[in-house]
Image (cartoon, rainbow, N blue to C red; front, side):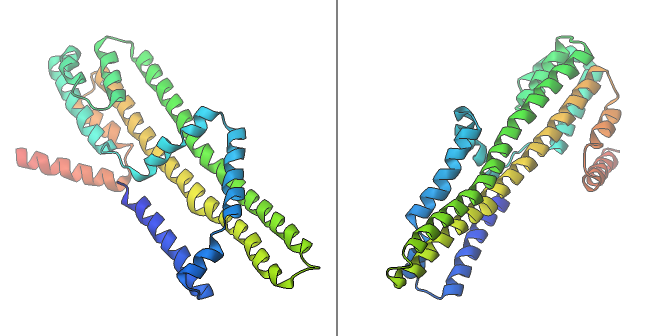
Length: 271
């Protein structure tokens, strides 16, 4: 579970709800009646979904549910763990040969890494190995862009439909100007609530989710780039120490220093 995403959702809901309560100083029931409006929700959310369906094919729109789950989940795989696995495989391959990695293939939980090791064992040309894995990486990035694009598109449409709802409410309000003046205030409130829905949906839901999906995509791309480089190093028979140094270049400087310190401590204990 991604605590940051969950905390952000809960804290945002609290801030909006508490701010509305403190501003109007109504009872919870009155506050609910003021800010919850069926037609406004229907216009804003329904219009946003309709435009998204026009923008994207249906299978891509339906994929939004599994995509959304990614913002609340974290992967146990990290570049640091991948480096340790790859260095261990490099040590074994250098000591016993590439064919000795056959027994390690099924032990790998990551399918991308498993595929790369199998290509190496099969004696595939290094350039072809790199090409195959980079093609897969490229299409993975394209699939990630679909999820990001879906939420970015909805962040554009939601405020627009919020404004459309507001215009509808204003038209109805102006139609009542010659009649009961008491209806003007409530109708104006309903009109503005629709704009509120559009802004909240775009800036509290769609844009943050698209941003988190970009972060998740970058993390996965970095992890797989580490794997590609490590697999090529193993196939070329590089010294495990050199493999580690090459792969550590993908890490942030702070994380790199921590890993180097841990490695040095391990070597001192072994000595």
